[in-house]
Image: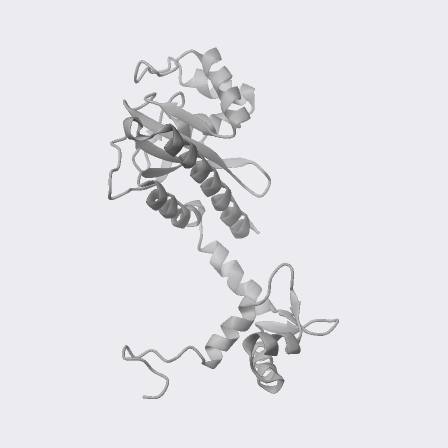
Length: 263
């Protein structure tokens, strides 16, 4: 059959494909496009381009801009609203967590504060060499140990952080490296905030290295944290620096997706 491959898929030149190509041309830098620009980018005659454009106008995916040209229409806004309603923090984070998991080969966690508690919302497991850790989906975590919990507390007001730590007192010592003195912990939180991320070694689980960074909402508020948990003995200094960069990038990317959802 003409225009189809062996798997039954038609070549990518249908009207629907052209419509998607046109919609993808709109950006923050170019919110309005002329018919001539669309024709040039599609590599088609202007009459053909205008036929595609008028079809999109008729279905409200585009509308004619007041000063000439075309801009995205109300139907796009309606679809965007539906898409945002179908997403939550976990759905926004999971694609990026999966990429981080693949890049590091380690377990990736998504955590958030719920009142005076820190909760593991989601985790992405590496099939290669995941470390054995205490973090399970839905579990409540210690507030005084682990990169995830400390990164969430670090960006809380000091009085709020002290209140959370005092509410959990006496603080449990999980390993010899666990901090249980509240003043020492508050100093540690100041250091984490200055660094922009948290790194912990064997503070919650023996031999586990944790690297976490805060995820911010559009207002700059910390709403969650993303972290990598790895066996410390197999992470070199160079690998640790790389993991820190990857985690910071993941936190930024998740925050950007959350911002899109909250618009």
